[in-house]
Length: 119
Image (cartoon, rainbow, N blue to C red; front, side):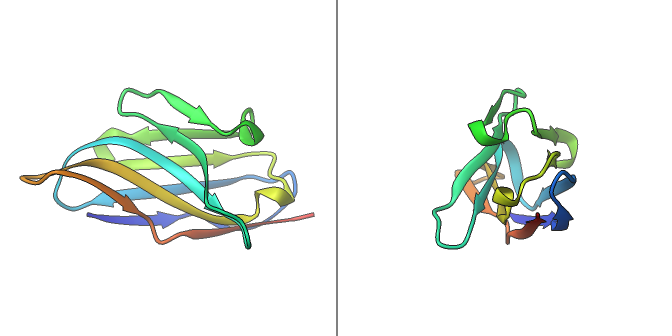
């Protein structure tokens, strides 16, 4: 299974970015998809997650500003980030949990995409 992320970049505070993560390969089903981030010197933290049924979960600091969504037919998850703040600056990683074709459960991480918010 391969994950390809896109959409990071540099933006001014108050701006918006949209991240995408597409999964491909021997996939039977995908359960949860999520976005994590890691700032320099800090631990990786969950930003938002979405289940196959569409239930979502957000960390408190991004509620009302970020929206996670998924396109099941494309095995793709998105993160729309609005009203960005300098403290949102981090490397953002996609995470996918599911089951492979003819194999057991899997969990994969994307390569990471840098999001930098200038003040």
